[in-house]
Amino acid sequence: MDLNLELLSIQNPWWRGESLKFDPSIEQYERQSLKRQPAALEQINLKQDKIYFLTGLKGAGKTTLLKLMIKKLIEADRVNPNNIFFYSCHNLDSFEQLNEMIKLFLSLKAEGKARRYIFIDEIAMIKNWQKGMDHLSKAAKLINATVILSASSFSQAKAKFNDVKNITINSLAFSEFANLINPDLFKDLTRENYQKRHGRLEYYLDIYLLTGGFISAINDYKENGAIRQNIYSNFLHWFLAHVARSNRDIVLTRQIMEKLILNLGTPLGYKTLTHKTKAKTHLTAVEYLDILESMFVIKTVYQSDGGEPDSRKAKKVYFQDPFIFWLFYSYTHGSLNYYQLARQRLHDPAVFFHLVENVVFSHLAKDEANKITYWRDNIKKKEINFLVKRGKGVAPILIRYDKEISQADFNIFKLAGFKKGIIISKDRLENKNGIKTMPLIYFLLFYKKLF
Image 1 (cartoon, rainbow, N blue to C red):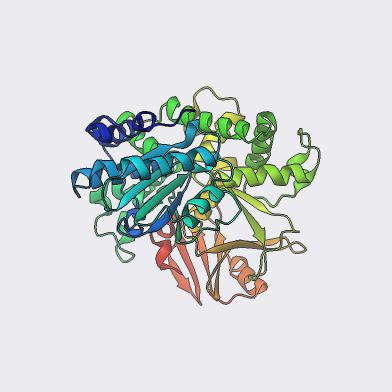
Image 2 (cartoon, rainbow, N blue to C red; image 1 turned 90 degrees about the horizontal axis):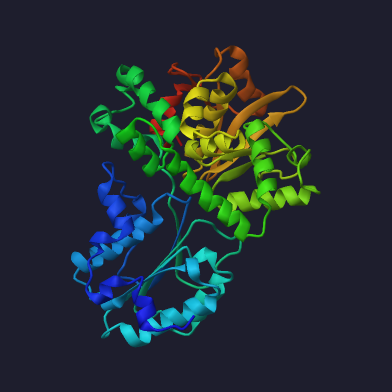
């Protein structure tokens, strides 16, 4: 690739005086009847010499966020467009190429001594990108510059360069979804007046369990009363392309997905994952789980007694969002209409109650301060779905949405050594001897205030 300013200007049309009005991400954002403003915006200070690293599931709105920041800089803050550089890394082969682009921008395009703004999208597509940014930082190329990086996958390796702030952009929680789709119903909703609206809230829970927190799926449902197949297909295409680009077997990936869906919410070992698949050893299963987790598709939860997780024992695997669950449920079942199958199977007991457990987990996982494990007594076959460690405290959570709550449920906390805890029910709300019982919807709306 012959690097020059003309090539760079293809992704930076504002250098030519062109408006962002017709930018695909901005156009899509403006067309949406429901618009998301990620809380990440409040964590980014564009006036600092800092590197921000935005990660999150594909479709969470990272690229749109970058373009909205650029639009604001040009139109509201009156920043010289020549001092703003954007590049999406889909066509780059190495970090050296990206570094040369950034240095070319800094030396030939950026004007004056004003602050420079560098936006790099999908940087994790470049191998050893951390090394490239480290080189730029140590060479003092990023002085008087704010750098925003984004990625739909992450590496377990820690970035070594200084002044990095990691920000995760999650899919919408139920409360955020609710305030978008029907703000009047959820206006002034509190824990005190919740029960008066419980019946109407259940209707929106069903919708959320289908759309998840994906703004494109939510908007499609609002406009069409369903989620069109292309919404699923776009994500699936990206997912399979990423698997292939990582030199992993797409067939084995699908086989492992089938195992995860069949065992959702159930403790499983690597033997279960590899049985009757193309995987030759449990190390292969570990490798594929790591890839899926790095793409924000799944999350592994380990067993513990409230302390450190024990990776030697059977673990559980959950999907990061209900939309992602239905995407792979339909994909592995060979459906041609993913939304139709999801609608048909939503209240199938074999699916629904595992989905409820999954959505509880996905909400807990949105706060990175929560360290999540589960407790199990293998002899007495008793289990607490989640232990949430935050600071020095541990909150046990038992899900009984599909069952009548009995004294035996309260005894599980005692057996595990906990005096306090949370039981998630279908519609029961009470506090008994330190054990708080609450409806699922109540928990999803107010879970942040419970810890």
